[in-house]
Amino acid sequence: MIIKSILVSQPAPNESSPYLEMAKKEKIKIDFRPFIHVEGVDAKELRAQKVDLTHFTGIIFTSKNAVDHFFRLAEEMRFAVPDTMRYICQSEAIANYLQKHIVYRKRKISFGEKNFADLLPLFKKFPTEKYLLPAADVLSPDVLKVLESAPIDWTRATMYKTVCSDLTDVNIADYDMLVFFSRQGIKSLGINFENFVQNSTKIAVFGTTTEQAAIDAGLRVDVMAPSKESPSMTMAIEKYIRSMAK
Image 1 (tube, rainbow, N blue to C red):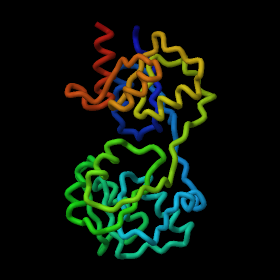
Image 2 (image 1 turned 60 degrees about the vertical axis):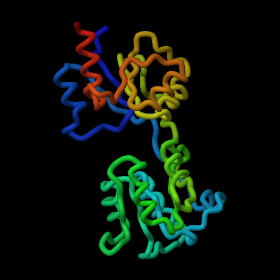
Image 3 (image 1 turned 90 degrees about the vertical axis):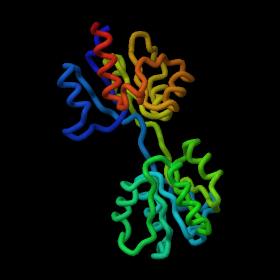
Image 4 (image 1 turned 180 degrees about the horizontal axis):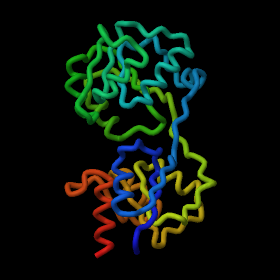
Protein backbone atom coordinates (compact mmCIF):
# COMPACT_ATOMS: atom_id res chain seq x y z
CA MET A 1 0.00 0.00 0.00
CA ILE A 2 1.33 3.43 -0.97
CA ILE A 3 0.85 6.20 1.59
CA LYS A 4 -0.76 9.18 -0.15
CA SER A 5 -2.47 10.98 2.75
CA ILE A 6 -1.66 11.42 6.45
CA LEU A 7 -3.66 12.96 9.28
CA VAL A 8 -1.51 14.27 12.16
CA SER A 9 -3.45 14.69 15.41
CA GLN A 10 -1.80 18.01 16.27
CA PRO A 11 -2.28 21.70 15.38
CA ALA A 12 -0.86 22.87 12.05
CA PRO A 13 2.86 23.69 12.40
CA ASN A 14 4.80 26.70 11.19
CA GLU A 15 6.29 26.96 7.71
CA SER A 16 9.62 25.39 8.69
CA SER A 17 8.05 22.15 9.92
CA PRO A 18 9.73 18.87 8.90
CA TYR A 19 6.23 17.56 8.14
CA LEU A 20 5.85 20.08 5.33
CA GLU A 21 9.28 19.20 4.00
CA MET A 22 8.36 15.52 4.08
CA ALA A 23 5.06 16.17 2.28
CA LYS A 24 6.93 17.93 -0.52
CA LYS A 25 9.72 15.36 -0.75
CA GLU A 26 7.50 12.27 -0.62
CA LYS A 27 4.64 13.86 -2.63
CA ILE A 28 1.99 13.11 -0.01
CA LYS A 29 -0.87 15.11 1.47
CA ILE A 30 -0.54 15.86 5.20
CA ASP A 31 -3.40 17.40 7.18
CA PHE A 32 -3.28 18.55 10.79
CA ARG A 33 -6.13 18.42 13.27
CA PRO A 34 -5.89 18.41 17.09
CA PHE A 35 -7.76 15.40 18.47
CA ILE A 36 -7.65 16.88 21.98
CA HIS A 37 -7.62 20.34 23.58
CA VAL A 38 -7.18 21.85 27.02
CA GLU A 39 -9.95 23.41 29.10
CA GLY A 40 -9.26 25.18 32.39
CA VAL A 41 -11.09 24.44 35.64
CA ASP A 42 -12.67 27.37 37.50
CA ALA A 43 -12.04 28.64 41.03
CA LYS A 44 -15.00 26.70 42.39
CA GLU A 45 -13.58 23.42 41.07
CA LEU A 46 -10.17 24.25 42.55
CA ARG A 47 -11.67 25.01 45.96
CA ALA A 48 -13.50 21.68 45.81
CA GLN A 49 -10.04 20.07 45.74
CA LYS A 50 -9.33 21.85 49.04
CA VAL A 51 -6.41 23.74 47.54
CA ASP A 52 -5.52 27.06 49.20
CA LEU A 53 -2.94 28.95 47.11
CA THR A 54 -1.77 30.93 50.15
CA HIS A 55 -0.36 27.76 51.74
CA PHE A 56 2.41 27.26 49.20
CA THR A 57 5.93 28.68 48.94
CA GLY A 58 6.96 26.90 45.75
CA ILE A 59 5.42 25.93 42.40
CA ILE A 60 6.47 23.03 40.15
CA PHE A 61 5.75 23.68 36.48
CA THR A 62 5.82 20.84 33.94
CA SER A 63 4.35 22.73 30.94
CA LYS A 64 3.37 26.13 29.58
CA ASN A 65 -0.27 25.12 30.04
CA ALA A 66 0.41 24.67 33.77
CA VAL A 67 1.95 28.15 33.91
CA ASP A 68 -0.99 29.83 32.16
CA HIS A 69 -3.67 28.09 34.19
CA PHE A 70 -1.96 28.69 37.54
CA PHE A 71 -1.75 32.43 36.97
CA ARG A 72 -5.26 32.51 35.50
CA LEU A 73 -6.69 30.89 38.62
CA ALA A 74 -4.54 33.03 40.91
CA GLU A 75 -6.06 36.13 39.29
CA GLU A 76 -9.56 34.64 39.38
CA MET A 77 -9.15 33.94 43.11
CA ARG A 78 -7.53 37.33 43.72
CA PHE A 79 -4.37 35.72 45.00
CA ALA A 80 -1.35 38.00 44.64
CA VAL A 81 1.55 35.63 43.95
CA PRO A 82 4.35 36.78 46.33
CA ASP A 83 7.74 37.77 44.96
CA THR A 84 9.26 35.21 47.35
CA MET A 85 7.61 32.28 45.52
CA ARG A 86 10.09 29.65 44.33
CA TYR A 87 9.56 28.27 40.82
CA ILE A 88 10.90 24.87 39.76
CA CYS A 89 10.45 24.36 36.01
CA GLN A 90 10.95 21.15 34.04
CA SER A 91 12.88 22.95 31.29
CA GLU A 92 14.51 26.27 30.49
CA ALA A 93 11.80 26.98 27.89
CA ILE A 94 9.10 26.75 30.58
CA ALA A 95 11.18 28.93 32.91
CA ASN A 96 11.54 31.59 30.20
CA TYR A 97 7.79 31.41 29.56
CA LEU A 98 7.23 32.67 33.11
CA GLN A 99 8.11 36.13 31.80
CA LYS A 100 4.60 36.26 30.35
CA HIS A 101 3.25 36.49 33.90
CA ILE A 102 6.00 37.77 36.21
CA VAL A 103 9.06 40.02 36.21
CA TYR A 104 11.75 37.40 35.70
CA ARG A 105 14.64 39.21 37.36
CA LYS A 106 15.19 38.75 41.07
CA ARG A 107 12.80 35.79 41.25
CA LYS A 108 13.71 32.37 42.63
CA ILE A 109 13.59 30.36 39.40
CA SER A 110 15.33 27.04 38.73
CA PHE A 111 14.94 24.56 35.88
CA GLY A 112 15.99 21.10 34.77
CA GLU A 113 17.47 19.84 31.52
CA LYS A 114 14.40 18.26 29.93
CA ASN A 115 13.00 15.24 31.77
CA PHE A 116 11.09 15.54 35.03
CA ALA A 117 13.63 13.28 36.76
CA ASP A 118 16.24 15.98 36.14
CA LEU A 119 14.50 18.05 38.86
CA LEU A 120 15.46 15.70 41.70
CA PRO A 121 18.71 17.57 42.49
CA LEU A 122 16.70 20.81 42.71
CA PHE A 123 14.21 19.23 45.12
CA LYS A 124 17.14 18.08 47.26
CA LYS A 125 18.64 21.58 47.10
CA PHE A 126 15.37 23.28 48.14
CA PRO A 127 13.64 20.67 50.35
CA THR A 128 11.91 23.00 52.82
CA GLU A 129 9.43 24.67 50.47
CA LYS A 130 5.78 23.66 50.44
CA TYR A 131 5.25 22.89 46.74
CA LEU A 132 2.16 23.06 44.55
CA LEU A 133 2.01 21.06 41.31
CA PRO A 134 -0.50 22.65 38.88
CA ALA A 135 -1.44 19.75 36.63
CA ALA A 136 -3.87 18.33 34.11
CA ASP A 137 -6.44 15.71 35.06
CA VAL A 138 -4.11 13.09 33.53
CA LEU A 139 -0.63 13.06 35.03
CA SER A 140 2.37 11.13 33.74
CA PRO A 141 3.30 8.14 35.94
CA ASP A 142 6.94 9.28 35.62
CA VAL A 143 6.10 12.58 37.33
CA LEU A 144 4.36 10.82 40.21
CA LYS A 145 7.24 8.37 40.60
CA VAL A 146 9.80 11.18 40.88
CA LEU A 147 7.73 13.26 43.29
CA GLU A 148 7.05 10.28 45.55
CA SER A 149 10.80 9.68 45.79
CA ALA A 150 11.64 13.36 46.35
CA PRO A 151 12.31 14.71 49.87
CA ILE A 152 9.65 17.43 49.60
CA ASP A 153 6.15 18.35 50.74
CA TRP A 154 4.01 18.65 47.61
CA THR A 155 0.34 18.88 46.63
CA ARG A 156 -1.24 18.25 43.24
CA ALA A 157 -3.94 20.61 41.97
CA THR A 158 -5.90 19.82 38.80
CA MET A 159 -6.07 23.20 37.06
CA TYR A 160 -6.90 22.10 33.52
CA LYS A 161 -8.31 19.09 31.71
CA THR A 162 -7.49 17.41 28.44
CA VAL A 163 -10.74 16.83 26.56
CA CYS A 164 -11.61 15.25 23.22
CA SER A 165 -12.16 17.67 20.33
CA ASP A 166 -15.21 17.48 18.07
CA LEU A 167 -14.09 15.79 14.83
CA THR A 168 -17.49 15.16 13.25
CA ASP A 169 -16.45 17.10 10.13
CA VAL A 170 -13.45 14.81 9.51
CA ASN A 171 -13.75 11.85 7.14
CA ILE A 172 -11.25 9.50 8.72
CA ALA A 173 -11.49 7.11 5.76
CA ASP A 174 -9.77 9.72 3.57
CA TYR A 175 -6.40 9.02 5.21
CA ASP A 176 -3.92 6.20 4.71
CA MET A 177 -2.12 6.96 7.99
CA LEU A 178 -3.12 8.46 11.35
CA VAL A 179 -0.45 9.89 13.66
CA PHE A 180 -0.87 10.04 17.47
CA PHE A 181 1.16 11.52 20.31
CA SER A 182 -0.85 10.73 23.45
CA ARG A 183 -3.21 8.19 24.94
CA GLN A 184 -5.87 10.94 25.04
CA GLY A 185 -5.53 11.24 21.25
CA ILE A 186 -6.19 7.51 20.90
CA LYS A 187 -9.20 7.88 23.21
CA SER A 188 -10.51 10.73 21.03
CA LEU A 189 -10.31 8.50 17.95
CA GLY A 190 -12.54 5.95 19.66
CA ILE A 191 -15.05 8.56 20.87
CA ASN A 192 -15.30 10.48 17.60
CA PHE A 193 -15.25 7.45 15.30
CA GLU A 194 -17.02 4.66 17.17
CA ASN A 195 -17.28 2.51 14.05
CA PHE A 196 -13.66 2.95 12.97
CA VAL A 197 -12.13 -0.25 11.66
CA GLN A 198 -8.41 -0.05 10.98
CA ASN A 199 -8.07 -2.50 8.07
CA SER A 200 -5.29 -1.08 5.86
CA THR A 201 -5.06 2.29 7.66
CA LYS A 202 -1.60 2.71 9.16
CA ILE A 203 -1.24 3.92 12.76
CA ALA A 204 1.88 5.85 13.83
CA VAL A 205 2.49 6.56 17.52
CA PHE A 206 5.00 8.57 19.51
CA GLY A 207 6.07 7.16 22.87
CA THR A 208 5.45 3.90 24.68
CA THR A 209 2.42 5.25 26.57
CA THR A 210 0.69 6.11 23.29
CA GLU A 211 1.71 2.75 21.84
CA GLN A 212 0.15 0.89 24.78
CA ALA A 213 -3.06 2.96 24.51
CA ALA A 214 -3.31 2.03 20.82
CA ILE A 215 -2.77 -1.67 21.56
CA ASP A 216 -5.35 -1.54 24.38
CA ALA A 217 -7.80 0.01 21.91
CA GLY A 218 -7.32 -2.95 19.58
CA LEU A 219 -5.26 -1.04 17.02
CA ARG A 220 -2.28 -2.30 15.08
CA VAL A 221 0.77 -0.05 15.47
CA ASP A 222 2.65 0.23 12.18
CA VAL A 223 5.08 3.08 12.93
CA MET A 224 6.76 3.70 16.29
CA ALA A 225 8.89 6.65 17.37
CA PRO A 226 11.22 7.58 18.87
CA SER A 227 13.85 4.95 18.23
CA LYS A 228 17.61 4.93 17.89
CA GLU A 229 17.29 4.97 14.09
CA SER A 230 14.34 7.40 13.99
CA PRO A 231 14.40 9.88 16.91
CA SER A 232 11.57 11.95 15.41
CA MET A 233 8.13 11.04 14.11
CA THR A 234 8.82 12.43 10.64
CA MET A 235 11.98 10.34 10.33
CA ALA A 236 10.05 7.22 11.38
CA ILE A 237 7.27 7.91 8.86
CA GLU A 238 9.73 8.59 6.03
CA LYS A 239 11.57 5.35 6.79
CA TYR A 240 8.26 3.45 6.72
CA ILE A 241 7.13 5.04 3.43
CA ARG A 242 10.43 4.14 1.76
CA SER A 243 10.26 0.56 3.05
CA MET A 244 6.76 0.25 1.56
CA ALA A 245 7.98 1.48 -1.81
CA LYS A 246 10.62 -1.27 -2.12
